[in-house]
Image (cartoon, rainbow, N blue to C red; front, side, top):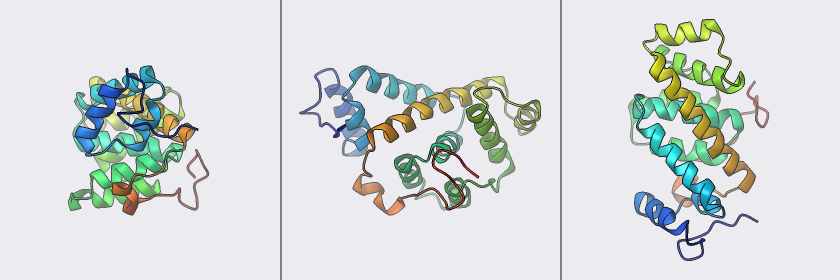
Amino acid sequence: MFAPLSVETAPAAARPMLAASARKFGFVPAPVGAAAHSPPLLAHLLAGFGAFDRTGLTPFEREVVAMTVAFEHGCHYCMAMHTAMQADAPEVQPVVQALREGRPLPDARLEALRGFALAVLRGRGRVPPETLAAFTRAGYDEALALDVVLGVGVYVLSTFVNIVTDVALDPPFARFAWHPPHAAVAGQSA
């Protein structure tokens, strides 16, 4: 069930989206191919990624949000793919490693971002005042708070699709394979 579809085998409505993903990555990522079973879902997911890319968060801040959600949901595909996307940036490797381990980040500003994203996710939008205060002290404002909410929402959907479809890791991401750390329980961090 949920075998990833190709440009040739996907429903007609999904084919242009799969072709665009193939151009971007050089292949159709398994989650995109699996989501193509529902063209409306795939369209919504890709539009969400596009919207999140246009927020005021930096590209790496967006990665922090994505990996925070992926860790919390135990999404092996997201963790491997987002790690691979940062592989050529040695300056961020301590942060990436901390995200993969579900531990506080060594950068105070990014840790405030991670804490806010976790609070949005775990509290279903109910962020404790002290978490919001730490977020604003770190230099983030109301617009960026809402950008984080967008990112959490997009990546909740993405991780759910990946988990429901049980996608296999694509070969380009295999060397970044990830499994929840010993202290984490599927779907929950310690």
